Image: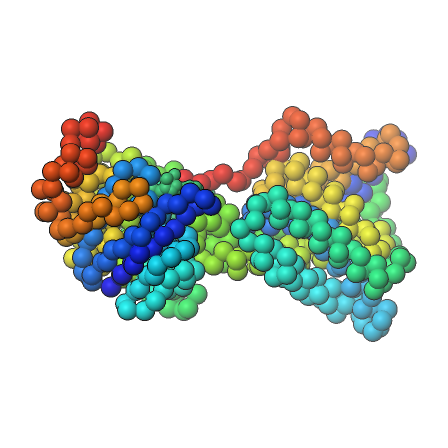
Amino acid sequence: MLRVRSVDASYGRVQALRGVSLHVDAGEIVTLIGANGAGKSTTLAVISGLIRAQVGDIQFDGRDVTNRPPHRLVRAGICQVPEGRQVFGDLTVADNLLLGAYSRWRRGGRSEVMADIERQFERFPQLDERRGQLAGSLSGGEQQMLALARGLLSRPRLLMLDEPSLGLAPIIARQFLDEVQRSRDEGLTVLLVEQNARAALRIADRGYVLETGRIVLEGTAQELLDNPEVQRAYLGKGYREVWE
Amino acid sequence: MTLAEQIWQFFLSGLTTGGTYALIALGFSLVYNATGVINFAQGEFVMLGGMITAASMTAWGLPLWSAALIGIAGTTLVGIALDRAAIRPARGASIVVLIIITVGASIFIRGVAGIIWGPDERVVPAFSGEAPIGIFGANITPQSLWVLGATLVTAIAMWLTFEYTVIGKAMRACAINPQAARLCGIELSRMISWSLALAAAIGAIAGIVLAPITMTQYNVGTMLGLKGFCAAMLGGLGNGLGAIAGGLLLGVLEALGAGLISSQYKDAIAFVVLIAVLLVRPSGILGGRRGGEE
Ligand SMILES: Nc1ncnc2c1ncn2[C@@H]1O[C@H](COP(=O)(O)OP(=O)(O)O)[C@@H](O)[C@H]1O
Ligand SMILES: [Mg+2]
């Protein structure tokens, strides 16, 4: 479904990605793990069109989508839930959801959008109770649910999540990842970026390990969990202290 | 006239000019919210509104209403052209560079207007006569009511747009967090076009309702733009209500200062106020709306 080939990207003179290649097949949850600053967010930003790929190409459904602007990629079915949630704090919960469906709304199908918003409210009753409140007043976990629901409202086929469990209590993070798994079971394909490698590998089918802008390892989730390098660097004791 | 009556009279005439400052300040806030840029060509939109209207009436003998519509439409097109020709090609440039581009654009627009219309002052007739209306002992012209009415209607229309329409909400989303807005499929450059078009239309409205009171000329945009900018800063840049409060307050302060101290200081008052705001309360009396990220 998604194929990224030898992509380079940089911020000014700082090169952030060097020859990154990865692929995500329909119905998979694929995770991208790596330390802070490894280039995980940059990888997602290149796929969603926020940052240019200087070299390499990106295919979605077999079509070249390299360096398309984000609104066209959203229309094509790629949606990124950004790092740190980034809900629109001064707008209500309901308006945040409506804007998630912005491109669908523009192309008509408005009653369908309204029905989808109600469906998300049924799925996340905490959001329903707060639909008229400003999104900025929600708790971190609620904001993350809102960011997910907002993303789902574009009816993506590929959902990309950037560190959704960051800053959440472990129980809330787990609930969130359960929701992600549920979305996959309903037919979504997911590219999940996490520093919390253990939690990500628990729900993922496959994974990639990114280090200073390069993919250094790839394999099934089980292979990565069993890999001594991964265990030492991402699942080891140091990691536990931070995350659990 | 007693002093109290005089003050009341100054207050009312201050509200009138303040209404136009409020409209100009709204234009500044709109563009600032969508782009982070202070658009120093905003004053030229005000000039264009008045001048195109006046010129359409004299050149084609059009009635006021159709000339005013042409004034608004023509100015809006200039706003869109400003975006396409100057702002969009410089995408990715720093905010300071974009602000300097708007300064350049304002000089360009003023220059072209000077070439087309020459240095003469133009008049737009008062919309509904000159007979003053008495309000508790003070006199106010009908045109003043038009100014205040236009301010009120524009402010309400903007509020409805931003509060209740999807495109208005999308523009607010761009102001709150452009990156997240783009990830929702909102086309940032289109929203910036919209904000400039709207700002131009609002500026034109200000210029048209003001023209019967002050006359208009190719170069009136500079001072009006600066006054509107002071008003926007006074109310808190990017804050719609603040723009209106700042505009009205600035107009009243100017009128009181000119009336009670000396009319020579009228223009200086705005800048004294601006400097005082920058020193004492840089976010303006109602604070900024920006910075809602996270
Ligand atoms: N906006 C930016 N400007 C300059 N450098 C950046 C920017 N964002 C990220 N970087 C740099 O790019 C590299 C990769 O960052 P990022 O993709 O955010 O990493 P991760 O998401 O894995 O933590 C880092 O070295 C980081 O310092
Ligand atoms: Mg990151």
